[in-house]
Image 1 (cartoon, rainbow, N blue to C red):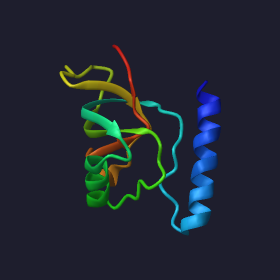
Image 2 (tube, rainbow, N blue to C red; image 1 turned 120 degrees about the vertical axis):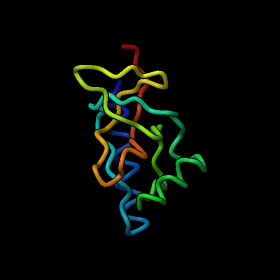
Image 3 (cartoon, helix red, strand yellow; image 1 turned 90 degrees about the vertical axis):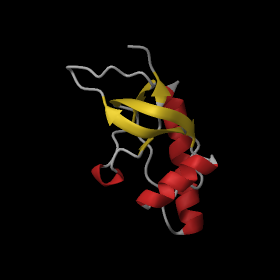
Image 4 (tube, rainbow, N blue to C red; image 1 turned 30 degrees about the horizontal axis):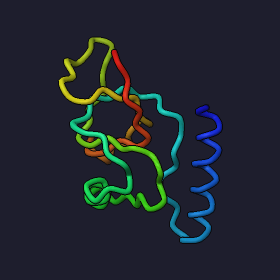
Length: 106
């Protein structure tokens, strides 16, 4: 299922990048456990605002994003918010946003 979704998302991103000239951030398979304050669609106004703060363009991204996230380590975090697995966030995003988040139960 994830492979079909990945192919569909990648196709949309490539098409969007060709149409706009500015590619959105690449969406890859989630691999990084995160504790996020909230998870919202990338198209939401909240996600757009946070993305603008860190210089991201989420136009055309059709996945959920985590907001105010911190990594869950081997030692663990007592995540009282939303536990998700996301695409590893870039360091320059400062934990404000993670892309392609899927809720998990630890």
